[in-house]
Image (cartoon, rainbow, N blue to C red; front, side, top):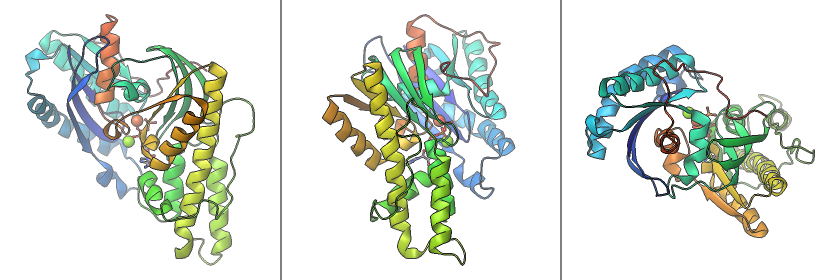
Amino acid sequence: MLLLAIESSCDETAVAILAGEPGQPATVLASEIASQIELHRVYGGVVPEIASRNHSLHLRPLVEQALTHAGATMAQIDVFAATSGPGLASSLLIGATAAKAMAAAARKPFLAVNHLEGHLLSPFVETGVVPPHLALIVSGGHTLLLDVESPGNYRKLGGTRDDAAGEAFDKVAKMLGLPYPGGPEIERAAATGNKEAFTFPRSMMKEPGFDFSFSGLKTAVLYTLSQRNPESGTPLREDLADLCASFQEAVIDVLVTKTLRAARHAGRKTIALSGGVSLNKTLRSAFEEACRREGITLATATPGLCTDNAAMIAFAALLHAFEGKTSPLDADIDPNLRLAAS
Ligand code: ATP
Ligand code: FE
Ligand code: MG
């Protein structure tokens, strides 16, 4: 089965073509991405109007590029899929409308995909099989712990009460004068820092339940900055690496502790990490070590599948297609689409 998927939920326009058969590893034949990060950077955040205009601009060339890279023709595509939420309404509309139009023109089925399900299933593209597991989605907008019985069968165990983990990386990076997106910048600076130099709070780590809170940590970094440099509140040059390492360690400590506790609670022997923050190498090694200690298998996505991409949307669609599911052509987008009720 050959699928073409479009992802346009925020500021990344992405098109992928995936080949797959039930129970077999899926093959990403093409995964094209046009990032708009540079366009929005000057505004300090994503401007919806600019995002949707650029999705319209990039989509057609990206579809053609994907077909060329995959060595496929439009007529060979069996299913057209697109992200239908959560995300920016005006951005979601561009991708979803384009996928529906292609499906209608080719007289092939359309499938609407939840962006978070794309992230969630991304660690399993390479095997094509999704075992029962405990999932941690750590992205720019979400920090979610889910108990996964099978694809489509999700139970939310916890989420963030305020900032998402990726958002905390981005906001703290901004305070430290580092560019957006902050995650990779903090990871780079942390590499030469001492993670014990500053003691930052591990909010809600000892409390029962599986929710997270990262806004107190952000405030603690801000407070430390103003203490260390009362003049301007900006980081002292000699503090930067230590601040990044200590902040990163606090985030990782909470994520690892709560995820392993959730796995124990749900009786799962596999943990899957997804979303942009799961690219962080220090976080990956902390999870590897903790999982090894507890005899848990760790599944992570290949780097290209962690941040927003359309291959993960195509894979989620593929699993739905195997179950015979399709979406009507009048299926609406939903900027607040949820993955599982809590
Ligand atoms: P959502 O899916 O919740 O709508 P998103 O799609 O914007 O959010 P992703 O693209 O999955 O999120 O991830 C982007 C986030 O990942 C950003 O917050 C970025 O700072 C963070 N990130 C990327 N690389 C790293 C890294 N190496 N370390 C920590 N964080 C990282
Ligand atoms: Fe995302
Ligand atoms: Mg993004």
